[in-house]
Image 1 (cartoon, rainbow, N blue to C red):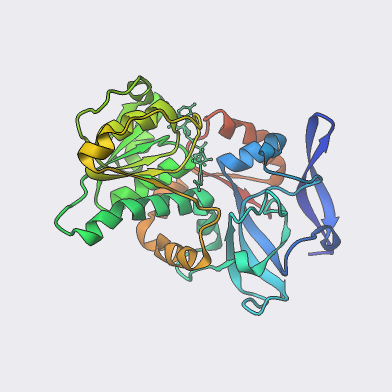
Image 2: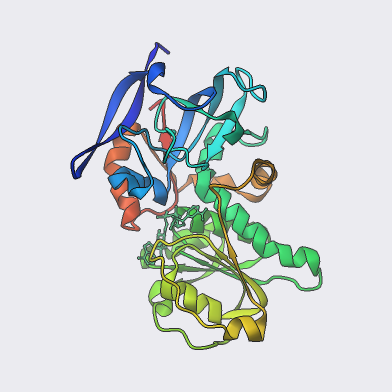
Length: 333
Ligand code: NDP
């Protein structure tokens, strides 16, 4: 590759935000101590918000977005990495306050990087990305109960926002763990897709979009929620004794109006998922489990691979909840 390379540059001009594919050189990259040739990045909900208007997360413009990437090290001033190492980057505010993965070459703090496990390809790492990493975190939180109390088997798990990145990968992982997954989705046309990922049944989102009772029939031993609001509030009052609700996202709203009764009568647990600041030790363990728990042949059928140019046309769809599965950004396309 010549000294020049392609990157998606987000800029602010007054009230307007522009997105351009520019040819830049390494001097443009101002953060970090490890330089990486990027193979793949991806499109997460947060990327959509950043590409739209910085999402109130980007502090300085011009900016290179992209919260995730996979690739190989070109140059390193960090003792933990050397040229040729294959690496994964998710979160740590890369793509927000630091330049991100929508660039053929990226430079980041080596303390943010995970060495790619041998049993994952660079492409598979980004099929997962932040969405898949969060799904793994959520699935492990739900499974935790079984480890401490082996007689308390988890059977039924609910996944909301199921056609989205986090939801679709959580469906695959929880099915692989042996649980009956019920998917909640607003897209009736995607029922067969969700069943092909491993959902045993699919419920229309409208059934959950109502004011919850104080407590309802206990149906779920675990919940992966990606949307918040009334859907999460209904999931809480339907969670069985000692069940775990992994709160991942706010695709619908930041709001949550609930009550204390299900917590007092059923001992349920609301666990927050924070993928962006998760420490490196946990990251290495979680990434190390990914290949065992994710059937990539299921996910690959629904993947859309885009170039940086095509990403500019695609990103508004994730903000409207119109994407099913994952969008991969191929930096060589
Ligand atoms: P996606 O856009 O891929 O998926 C979100 C899904 O939620 C949609 O596909 C849709 O699924 C559903 N949805 C969208 N809008 C609404 C709405 N208004 N009401 C109800 N459901 C809706 O996003 P991701 O999977 O990448 O992320 C999901 C959420 O998780 C986001 O809020 C994101 O910010 C958050 N997140 C948090 C992380 C963390 O570390 N805590 C990490 C990663 C993501 P369907 O049509 O099937 O209902």
